[in-house]
Amino acid sequence: MPNALNGKKILLGVTGGVAAFKACELVRELQRWGASVQVVMTEAATHFIGTASFQALSGQPVFTDQWDGRIANNMAHIELSRQADAILIAPCSTDMMAKLAHGLCDDLLSTLCMARDKPLLIAPAMNRQMWMHPATQRNARQLRDDGVAILGPGNGDQACGETGDGRMLEAVQLTEAMEAFFTPKSLAGKSVLLTAGPTQEPIDPVRVISNLSSGKMGFAIAQACQRAGAQVTLVAGPCALPTPDGVQRIDVRTAQQMHDAVHALMQPRPDVFIAVAAVADWRVAQVSDQKIKKTGDDDVPTLQFVQNPDILASVARLPDAPFCVGFAAESEDLEKHGEEKRRRKGIPLLVANIGHATFGRDDNELLLIDAKGHTRMPLAAKTDLARALVLHLAGQLPA
Ligand code: C5P
Image (cartoon, rainbow, N blue to C red; front, top):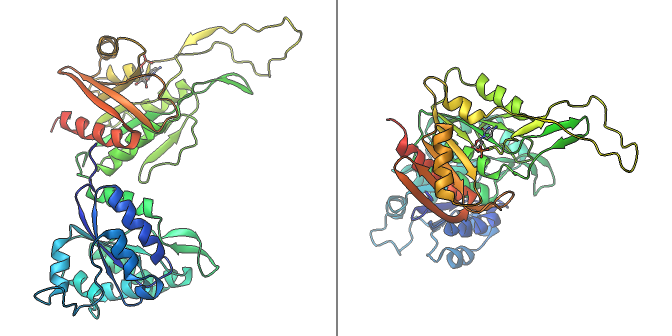
């Protein structure tokens, strides 16, 4: 599965802070995604964690000193910064932010940052007062203006016992941010509207008919589209998943509400509409205002249903319709039924779930069906499939 971090060389700068221990996990996480890591530490960082730990984890010698004799030409700052695809400083101390903002170079890490011809990303980690200090905020603004990406900081309990902004982001969050940074912006300038999750169709004020969709696939695709540079709106049925960063989310409950929310977003038309939601085909014809009472042992209510609007087909029928992508869970003869469904809905691309036990799981197996034929995506994490799907989709859009 494609992953923008795979094969990348990351120079990981570690500065003095308690969060330096989290940088050990970060090395492992970056490696797990296929990146190689060269660690450079400041002198202060070595008071928190030894070079031996990073050397063992990264499998590469650790550099701390501008005058390190291991670099033949004695230009460690040039050599190290040229070898990397990007420099990530995590944790980045208040002091290092100040040095970077003012162009000071009094140690190896600050000097190689000045000498860099590669992107610089920093993950600040400090006490909340230090983060909120006007000088630090001024430095952060300056660094952003200089093109430095600032990842976090997060909010929460701090090692000093206080609570607030200034925590370094977790290793997994930083790795995801690095992957997002390297992701080709294949959907730059495009707007994408998605539906995801289940719908709930009420029977009475306390009972609903729904399905087991978790929303994981749709949310993963929304995130992948956002990371590929698209402007993303997600119309979500009831599900407890966090909203991906940078995605606009609209919560709805019923199929009719989902339909109305989607059509309200058709002016101006999005470039792409991806219908991932497991929309209820039917709703109860007469929703009871009161909870339906159980009056006797043999008393079983009868429910009448009416059909819900087909959101995807209704969008595909619009004049100047967006590029429409549908999902399908077919239990037999996937290719034949998938192709039939693609034509019936009038859409260019249908994504069929191979096997129908995907609801709630973190992985999936897909068959992409378009006018040219089929593309199989073998079993993988939904987040990986989402990235691959976005690349496939981007290749199909008009230039
Ligand atoms: O017809 P079927 O429900 O199998 O089609 C599934 C595809 O159609 C999915 O992309 C789903 O999001 C979409 N759909 C819809 N509105 C409905 C039913 C399905 O948008 N009422």
